Image (tube, rainbow, N blue to C red):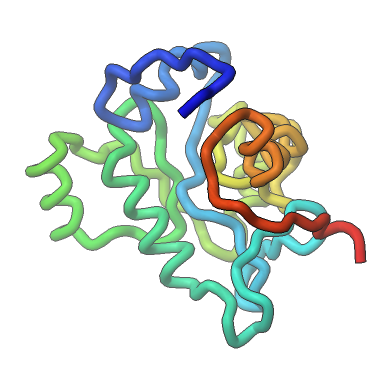
Length: 178
């Protein structure tokens, strides 16, 4: 790969280790699930930060995939340094398995109510900033750890190509234009 940037190899063993040097200025939490656009979502991303999770209601990514499977995969390797925010708790047996294999005790799990979590986090004084996997339309802009517009742009295939990240050939289009 011919990247324009010289990235140093990561020496940690968890997502907390990865973010450690970047989260010393405030109190951070990590929202471990992606937003959704489906009708079941309490906070659908339908205003600005479009996420491609299916073109019709029948093909939308399911609740269990977004709020359990994806968030639990991230929780498994989160480590202890950042509170992990989940809206569905992982089973005790799964936590025990992760502890045995990864060594984390997961004492940093922050359970939130599925129907109010973004509102609760927006007014929560415990977390100054929230790390997200993708920008949330329903989360106050000042609560995002990374500027939402910048985050959204960095996730675009066009930007990845501009940065020299190898990726397959594709056609791009602007989701905000018809």
